[in-house]
Length: 169
Image 1 (cartoon, one colour):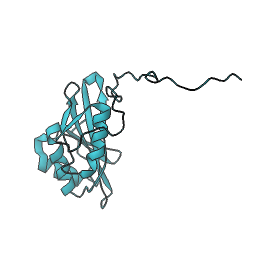
Image 2: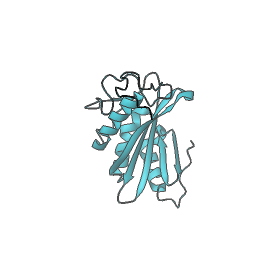
Image 3: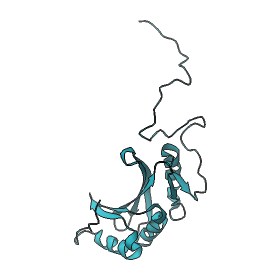
Image 4: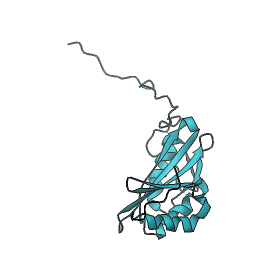
């Protein structure tokens, strides 16, 4: 990614300027793709970045997820926030090392990030430090590993064989 600013005619240009003013050198990269402003910040700046966006009118936490980049030995946290008044979207991205994936929670800024962080923790193993209820949401308690990581072997149905009968035609 580059530090290219959105074109002056873009409605996201003002948002980019406000983020630069508030976060300064904390911004690693910023660009506009497909009408979304993408901002990459260090993990420790995630809550602050989301708080600045909330004050700029991004009132809806749309979704959060994880991305596994095994060739780079990093996991990425991806937050998408939306301004219902301006009809604008911003993606906030943070990269963490695969061997110690920790990032501060966004629940202190957007309560709607709760389930998204739980799902990301469960599927990718990214720990959201300060999350009030980081517990399983989708997988069974016996599940081991993180099924959305690209190095995870997805086992076929081995734990419990199918109890049905086979019928010949």
